[in-house]
Structure formats: C-alpha cells, structure tokens
Image 1 (spheres, rainbow, N blue to C red):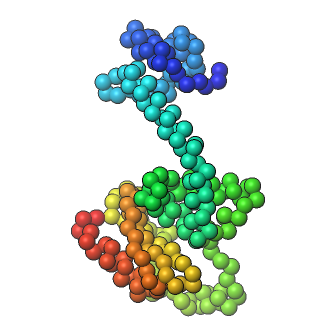
Image 2 (cartoon, helix red, strand yellow):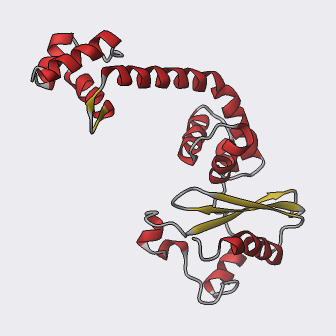
Length: 225
C-alpha cells in the first residue's frame, strides 16, 4: 500500500479509535492506510497530553507550506552554494553563513550531498572542495625527515571522543577563507556542538593576523564557553 498524506478526517478517526482502545494495526485497517502510517503519525504528534488531531493537522499543514517554499527557493539556494564553493569556501563555512546572509540555512551534509550529485552528472564542484594535494618527491622526503612539523603537535585524529561526538559546548573549530593569493580573507570559528559562528575579516592572510583575530573573537567569551 503506497504512502499517502493523512486527511483531517482520518486524523480525527485515529483519535476516536485510540480512545476506543483499538491497536495501531486495527486503526490502520479501519481507515485504509498502512500500519506504518499510523505508527509514524502517533510517534510524530503524540505529546504528554496525548494525541490531538487538530494540532496534528496544523503541524502537517505547516510542514507542507514550508516544503513548498523550500522547493520554490531550491534553484537559487543551489546557485548560491555553487558560487561560494567556486570561491573556495568550505561546506561548513557556507552552512554557517547562509542563514545570516540570505535568511535560509542548510546543513553542511546537504552541501556535500549536492556536490556528490553534481559530480555524478559530470560537474566540477567537487574540485573546489579542500582536499590533500599530491606532494612532490621533495616534499615527501622533507615530511619523512620531520621538516615543517609543529613541535608536539597533536593531530585532529587524536582529539578526545567528547570533542568528536560534540557532547559538550566549548570546543571550537577554526578555518580561513582566502581571496586571491593571500591578499585578504576571513577567519571563522564554529562551536562544534551548537554551530555558533564567529567571523572576522583579515586584511592579509598570515599566521600572526589569523591568531590575533581568533584571540579577539574569543576573548569576550572567555569563561563563558
């Protein structure tokens, strides 16, 4: 049986049959829908006070209106994301900036999915993702000799599980967006659990200016997170 949206009448029937003590399977057969439809409806709309068919209908109508608006705006959202990717923004940065800039937000997972779909159709957005570049033999030898390493550096793969799993607030992840050949850019800091974004402009991209900008962004929040 194909999935169909429940009607307002069916929602009132679900409420009445539940009050009569019928099981979810019996209700599904009585109103002519699949068992999973009733199960999903009750799971989605049952509150501590019980199942309210009128409230469930209002929520369903709201989701439908929101989905329609999203579909109408999808082409412009995709164009916005594609432009930012070609400017070498990371999916995480695009996700963080979208809501403040255009009033609509998407997750970075959605952006990665968009890139995969584009690649499957022969597009080149994937080329703009930040990926490890192939190193020359000279650079490979230097790396094996330990040159260019930060003393006592701890790799991101060794960060604690509580950071990786976003259990607590207070762990920040930094990144930079470069315009031109290090002429200018942005430094961004994202709190991993909440997704809260801080950003500052860099007149020139350098380690010293980036460090100073990060300190300036985090200093007012010292002790708070």
